[in-house]
Image (cartoon, rainbow, N blue to C red):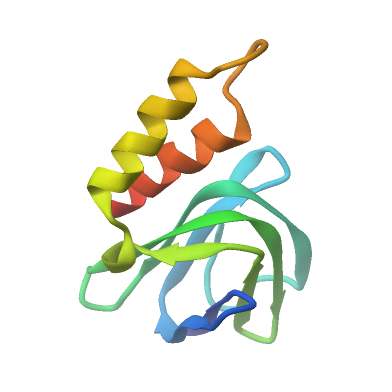
Length: 124
């Protein structure tokens, strides 16, 4: 059984259609939504959002934070910034990763570094 998935940013709808699952990072852990999932509202961390389809294919989206809502077999990801795997410039993402790594301040990866990592992961 499928669910309806939407990946939305202020600029445009990156995806609207059916999928068998939507996986992303919310509240410090990964969560997967399948058909008939209980209602849910939560934050979305900087992560790769994966949509899996009936034929086994997967689409990936770099999500740079936002919210997710699930109700009545509809999963909506509302992201401040989101990029589809096919729209990511890999060389630019690598350059951003290198730049942010060389300008790291403090402990732990910066949001800039994590966004660059997510872009590369989504594009691969």
